[in-house]
Length: 297
Ligand SMILES: NC(=O)c1ccc[n+]([C@@H]2O[C@H](COP(=O)([O-])OP(=O)(O)OC[C@H]3O[C@@H](n4cnc5c(N)ncnc54)[C@H](OP(=O)(O)O)[C@@H]3O)[C@@H](O)[C@H]2O)c1
Image 1 (cartoon, rainbow, N blue to C red):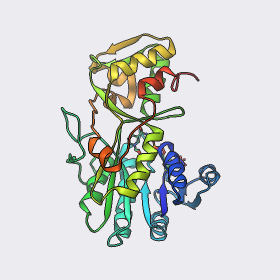
Image 2: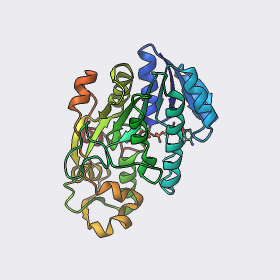
Image 3: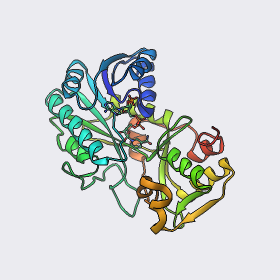
């Protein structure tokens, strides 16, 4: 298939592009800068220049392709409303242009907000609808468009980990460096689902090939790793103590990530693993931490 991939230069996107190319697909990656274009082309993929706000480029990319995988996100944590606005705008555009075509539309999402108090499953749906909702309510916007649009949600674990990750665990690691201890909120019993980046890239490619419209895929290898054990792993790597932080002090200790770090974000993926015949084989999060993936530089 000829696949239009937004976020092709990103952490998950670059692994996804590798996997798609290895499986014989053609890839056109959206790039907003010369550096991103060069990194995509170096893999052997084509480039469409544009960004999340050049909606005509998103439209043209989707029209020319057999499928769309949308992974780009502004990730502006100082202005989450702007990231949500752009995410909704991009998803609205793809939903509009892909309606009635039967072309697969895979888009990034997460596991927050699905099932407070228990591990989320593939059949859970959030209440998040409308522009003011987290991520602009984009997941329900796209899934509600089935069957006109062949939407598939890619619900990634909150940590897609590995060497070079600049996501949540690297932010927690930086907070530990800055403060001289590796913190967790309260008793640290709240846990995060996790998946290695290489396993995530493979799951996305398998999802393109196998997931029916309307599926929510849980790209999750480990159901839940306690935030206390994550902090202890970070602490060992940095030679720093691990320590509890009172929930009232979490914002001061961790900044914007405190809202996620204090959440229980456990998730199961049995249905996804069965549907895709996907067996995660990468290192666990704690193995990555022990190997210095976050702390060696
Ligand atoms: N990583 C995780 O642990 C995780 C967990 C749950 C969900 N997710 C979701 O999965 C998706 C991919 O995440 P990721 O970790 O791969 O993100 P990432 O490494 O931050 O990559 C983001 C991608 O989006 C592109 N991008 C950013 N702003 C853009 C703009 N204005 N216009 C066009 N492209 C833009 C970036 O391009 P440049 O290369 O030019 O910067 C990059 O290719 C996101 O939706 C994310 O929220 C990720």
